[in-house]
Image (cartoon, rainbow, N blue to C red; front, side, top):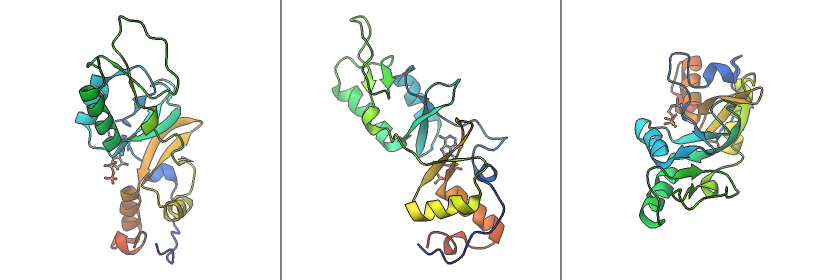
Length: 177
Ligand code: ADP
């Protein structure tokens, strides 16, 4: 990873993060309260590589990040091999088991595939620093927050596109060569 060429523009994380104003909102999952079919719907309706997991839709407080491929494998596994799992089974990213009653179907527990410390920056973080962190940590994406609320995501490709726009040349030669 060459870091010879410094990124010297005054852009901030908020300028590069998605979604843009015109885009659909960030696709997130909640730590609890979603069913298997609701999570499967999110997977089917989007093609994102991963999903932030939040405490609640209302708080948008970040809990972790889950990769699409891990989610697909785990749900598929649960559907096939975990007894009693149905479409209305709860999906739980929490660590502790909530009390269950005999009348509700078993939950699918996905705490183990949750990255509990996804990298985050704030909307005010200069892109110069974000680029540096991506390079040094080899990140694929990072999350963007403001006052503790999750607002957006920046992927490596978003950065490359942004750099190409700024430099107006082949992005691969600048950042991750
Ligand atoms: P890549 O940027 O490598 O194509 P993705 O497929 O995950 O990676 O993301 C495609 C675009 O959607 C990017 O611009 C990214 O910022 C945005 N994005 C990624 N994950 C989400 C998400 N969960 N909700 C909304 N937008 C997302």
